[in-house]
Amino acid sequence: MTSSLVVSVPTQQLAEDVRALVDPSLGIEIVLWEDGEAPRDDIGMVVPPYMKQGSMLRALETIRPRLVQGQAIGFDGVADVLPEGLVYANGTGVHETATAELTLGLLLVAQRGLDDVVRRQDRAEWRAEWTPGLADKRIVLLGYGGVGKAIATRLAPFEVDVVPVASRARVEDGVEVHGIDELTGLLAGADILVNVLPGGPATRHLIDDAALAALPDGALVVNVGRGPTFDTDALVDHVTRGRIRVASDVFDPEPLPADHPLWGLDGVFVAPHVGGLSAAMRPRIARLVASQAERLARGERPANIVLGG
Picture 1 (cartoon, rainbow, N blue to C red):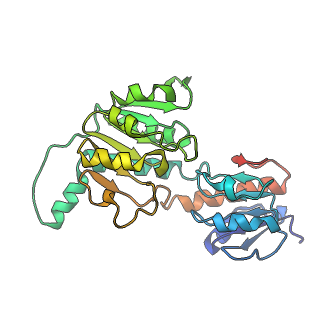
Picture 2: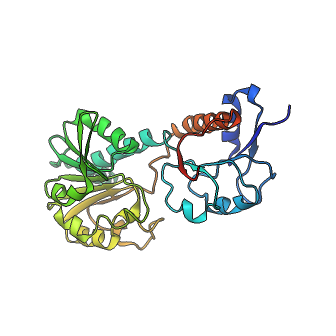
Picture 3: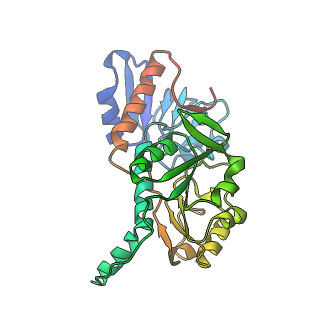
C-alpha cells in the first residue's frame, strides 16, 4: 500500500507506540529520524527529539514537511530556527499533569523542610523542626494556562489561597484571574510565588529585582516555567541575603554551571529541568503524535498549532 503520509519520530520506542495507535486504513508510515540528514525527502510530519530539537529544525528546509510536531509545551526560540513557512505544533496535553506533580513536590519539599530531613538522614541525625507548611498560605500563581490550571486543581485540597495571574484580568469558570499589571501589589501579600509562564521576549526578566523586593521576607519562589523569566543575578542576591527561598526546576543558564552560586546557597532546592520527565509522557506523546498524523492523513487541520498555519 502506498503511504498517504510519512511521519518521522526520534526513537524506536515512539515509533512502535505510534504504529500501534494509528488507523491502519489511512496508510500512515512511521520512520525513524533522530539526527543527521533526513532518511528520505517525502516526510510529511516530523517529530524532533525531546528538548534537543534545534539542529533538526534547521535541517527541515530541504524536506519541507507539512507539520513539525514538538514534544514540549514551550516553544521559545523555535521561531528563530524554524524555516520560514513551516507549521509547528507544541505538546499541549502531554506535560500538564507531570509538571503540576513536580510543582506540588517542590512546594512540599520547601514548605515542609524535606530537603533538610534528607540531609539529616545522611548524618543519622534525629531532629524535628517546625516548618511553614502549605495550609492557609497565599500562592500567587503566575500563568493560568493548561499547566497553571492543573497546578491550581491539585492545590485545592491543601487549603491554600491561590491567586491566579495572567496576561489580562478576567473571570474564567468562576475564578477571578488577575492581570499582569497587578503583579507587584499581589506579590506584597504572597507567601509563595509559583511561575509557570512560557519563555520569550515578553516574559524575560519579568521577575526582576523590584518584583522580588515586593515579596515579604521568607517568601518561597517556585519556577516551573522558564529560567529567563527571572533575573538570575537579582534572585541570587535576594537568596544570599536570606530574604527569600527558591525551589526551581528551570534556570538561566541551563544546565546550571557547577560553580553557580545557586548550588551552594541555603534555602535553594535545585531540580534539573525534569518537569515533563515522568512515565506518563510516553503514552501521552504517542497519542498526540498518532492523532496529529491521522488528522493530516484525513486532510484535517492539526491541533496545537503555535507557529505558521
